[in-house]
Amino acid sequence: MSRPSSRSRRTAPSRTAPSRAARCAPWWTGAPSGSSRADAVTLLVSALLGYLLGSIPFGLVLTRLAGLGDIRQIGSGNIGATNVLRTGNKPLAAATLILDSGKGAIAALLAQAWAGPEAAVLAAGGAMLGHSFPVWLGFKGGKGVATALGVLLAVSWPVGVIACATWLATAFLFKISSLSALTALGLSPVFGWFFGGPLVAGLCLFIAGLVYIRHAANIRRLLKGEEPKIGAGKKKA
Image 1 (tube, one colour):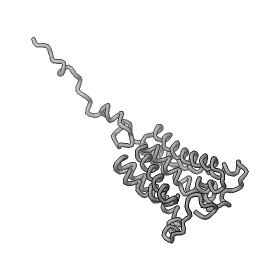
Image 2 (cartoon, one colour):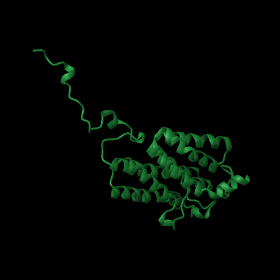
Image 3 (cartoon, one colour):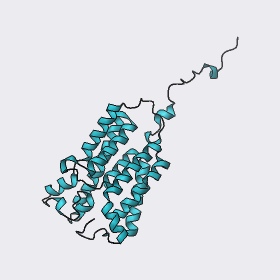
Image 4 (cartoon, rainbow, N blue to C red):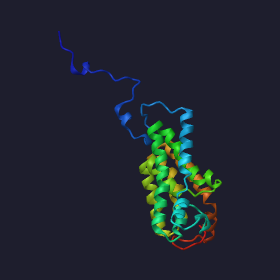
């Protein structure tokens, strides 16, 4: 009697179980992870927690702690890092940038660890809405650029890195913060489609739309050639 070959003794892989490659694939690629999709309640909770985390107004908190008063009464009245920079306190502006970026990233990463990619995307979108329309400040928040870049770095780091590089390149060439943000985030759906997949591209499209809405006044000034450049002082932006 002939012995069965080693190939025939191998156990055939289950047709229902995901492959090892699929289980180990980065979630932003859209490959199945083997876990079931999050249910509607989980997704809703993820979005709500993302909103609450995103609504923390770090720019306002830090300027008050530093004795600089209400940032909403300075410059453009925005609570973001660009307006904090107009106080002349560069370390405080850098801290605002890091914290505003970090809260978006943390929201997405926590949701991803808890319930998967769909929850991460909704938490990221919630963080963007929270920063732009915080309930604590009468729904008058920031423009969402730092939070958007943090979200993209967490959801799909290649897309986030390319968006950040686009912002830096545009800022270097034109020295206009709003133009840099509009360019980087306006192109982000394209970056998302090619480097993150449909889910990431959809998030990028939502972020871009929200940021453009929040920058309506900046866009009007850009078209008139009246938009101030980075470091121009306490002018509206």
